[in-house]
Image (cartoon, rainbow, N blue to C red; front, top):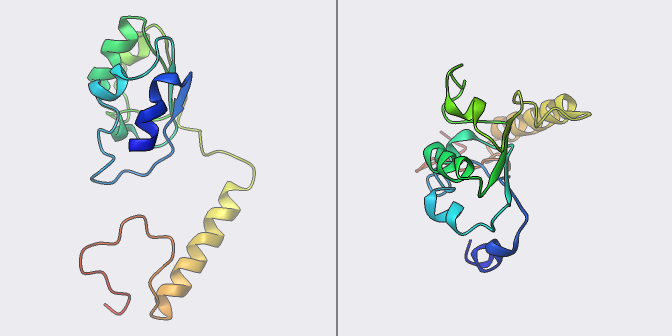
Length: 137
C-alpha cells in the first residue's frame, strides 16, 4: 500500500481487485478518498465492505469523485439508499465476474482445492488461512 499511496493522487481510476481481509475491510475510507485525484473514478468489482459508503457518498455528492460499483455495502442495496440517486455513481447488478468461462474456471479451481485437501495438503487457493489451520484437521 505504501507504493500505491505514493502515486495514488496521479491516478485517473482506482480499481479495487482485492479480497476482504481484516487489513482491507474499510480500506477505502475518507482518508483514502481524499488522497484521490479530483475527477478520478473509483471502480469496485470486488467486495462492498472494502469501501466506507458514507465517505464515498460525501465525495461523490460533492462532485469531486465518481464511482462505478458492482458491489455495495450494504448489499443488497435497499431501494431507497442514496447511492441509487447520487450523481457520479453508477451501480451495476453484481455482474463484474460474469466473463466467458468463469463457471468452468470456478469448478476447476474447486475440484483442485478439494483434491488437495483430500490428500492432506493445504489448498493453494486459500485467501486467508484460519489461525491454527492444518490440512490434517
